[in-house]
Length: 360
Ligand code: IPM
Ligand code: MN
Image (cartoon, rainbow, N blue to C red; front, side, top):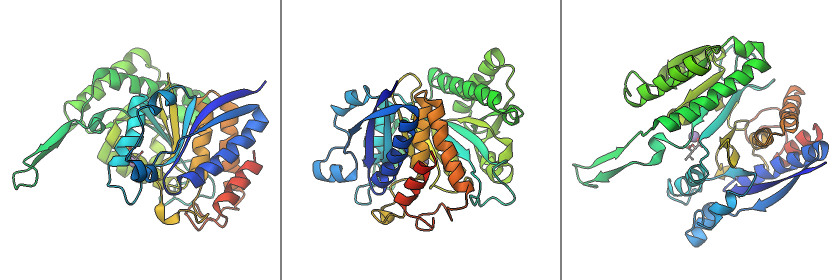
């Protein structure tokens, strides 16, 4: 019996549409094998539309998105649009409106992929960051007064409530329990809470107590540890093998996952999911719109392809999702891919999509 999923497709800006096309190619191949069909709903959102109409996400679109099974996003960001407009108006708006409170970002080094981290390989770089995705500094609390004068004051406040912290930590503990079952190597490692509680004494303390209390009461069998965010960046480079599941607040998660993307071989392979475990989730390559590579068939679609795999896994299509991951693994293992960097892959964007689809 085949199942049909209603997927919102948002190519967005720059290379977004190109990489999504390859991702859809692979989803199609996997769908044929596992009996999945997709009802694709296209959304023309992004910088071009904003320039023409002044609209980011029209209000009428939000209730439509809530009826989808998932959203597949290419990239948001346009060189001619002032920073903040599309990011806040599209990406953050959807994250907030759909309450996608988890940003799940695997950091996994595949075989034959070059990492800038000396003497570390796939055995050492294999963890996942659970980034809180609806709170903190991203809520935009703050303002500015006396703007343009020498006395200008600006504030932007990190805000968290216990419920928001608890639901994120809960997700992370559940994920940790699942990974420990999957692989004894993961079970040896603790789940880490990452924060800056030596300075952010209010928010850090809230996160720390929530993490400790839940760990003690409900997940006593899971090892847990705490790390400061600055030290974490150091350990990503020095001892990435210490990590398995990391849970952290929004901005810290944003920053450390860019570093995570680099140690796993770059933006060409880094995928992420904006997840509402009870609602509609959105999956994307985290690399951005790469305007200078647009339309040249040189951008790496692997991150978008992997994001498609995450989408299927989150929809409960575990086998199909893993088949995508395994196809990417096989392609890299084969040595046919020279590099993950745009223009240096040894094959074009569409050829990469063909290769992965053929390995499904
Ligand atoms: C990301 C991006 C976004 C963020 C920007 C584009 C708003 O950097 O998804 O990591 O900061 O969350
Ligand atoms: Mn980011």
